[in-house]
Length: 202
Image (tube, rainbow, N blue to C red; front, side):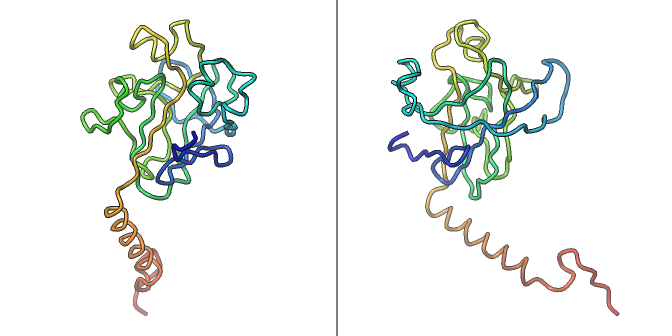
């Protein structure tokens, strides 16, 4: 995390561009059928791998990053609440793109789209498994063939969750901020009744 622009912020991660990601514990859903977003049951605490160097495997120490205390087969979804300005966020699981369901790429792609648009999208509840379906994020051990990575590539090397934020460049961000200020000003100073008040003549 050193030099990456990523920092722990409470029980979440703050990425470049002000992107805020929290890992929300939830109910495990049946793998068949259609279900609404399950309730949040609290946030997983986020800790630096380096702070537990004497207790984690060598591979973890070499990669760095953060860890979450998750039970085997526990489910989660990712919350992006707290992200105030536009950004694109790539989310990977075992270096497979959770948004497209395809192998991870280090750059943004529209076809197929391999990122979520923030702050418009408030959460991501799982991995695109094709045909408009999503599989929950569930903690499984490496080496048993149960990971998305193992099912897609036949190997289990990476595991975990990968995040990469792409904030707007300086000029488009300045323009977005200007439009946002104008919008907020219009909301405060609009004509009577323009925003939901009763405006019938007397």
